[in-house]
Amino acid sequence: MAKGYFQLFSNQQGAYLRIVRAGGSDEIDIQEIMAYLDNLGIYYDLQYLNKNLGIVINSGDAEALILISGQLTAPVNETYTLTVQPDKMTATVRFYPPSYGDDPTMAGKRIAQTELMRDLAFHKIIYGVKNEEIKAFFAAPRYAVDFVVAEGKAPRQGSNASIEYLFATQLSSKPTLNEDGSVDFFHLNNISHCRAGQELARLTPEDRGDPGTNVYGESLPPHAVKGLAFRRSKNVSFSEDKLSLIADVDGHVTFVDGNVFVANVYSVENVNSATGNIEFEGSVVVLGNVYTNFSVKAKGNIEVRGVVEGAAQKAAATSSSPVA
Image: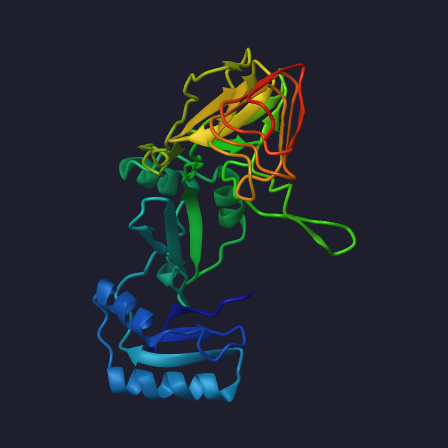
């Protein structure tokens, strides 16, 4: 978007501000004009200047001259302000045009590109200097508008490590809903089965990110991140790249205090409505009783230390008390 600007003009009648507008009502800033004239030590009547600037803006004219003082005693060269943002990530310059007049000796000089580059180096602005954009600017200057001459690179922030568990880490004894809408209280889904060689958990390592650099060439570290590591536990192994946990045996996988355990023996107090039927890949030990209408099935052994009340047992080998 085009931006209006102002420029000093001199003739025999005095010194003027040439106002060049681009169409916006707020494109000419009286505070900026005041700072510019104050910096040059040029006297002006603020009330008069403010009144006539308002007239120029409201007129809609593309250009206008406002008399501000007596004649200029010397030409005014092109100037600029250099600003570095508080975060040191952006350096901008804002150029103001040289004066001109009826008398050619009152024409100010333009700044050379090499002067700006030396000034940037003097202020230790060494990173992200926009050489091509600066060259283009000097070929076609734009006044009273901020122009980015250097830009830092923000750090790429990383992320904490994470572990994805590929089994149900929180089991609850909930009955199974059958397809016909009925509820099966004998299958409570309270065992998380696994087989030897099955992947149980996957680790995504922490991403430490990459440092950035501000316009002064200072390194900007990314935020600290947290790492994680698997804990070695019973009947599990690490994959070769240490990023997966693998079950060593068929059995029941559980998650306790951050550890993954695989048990090939499933131990239960009683088999009843609180547990539902037991189906297990390894061996089953029932410390108490197996109640009527409930069953125990296992790929390994079944040991019942209490009473089996007309219940079904199916195992590779079975040891139990007599059926009641």
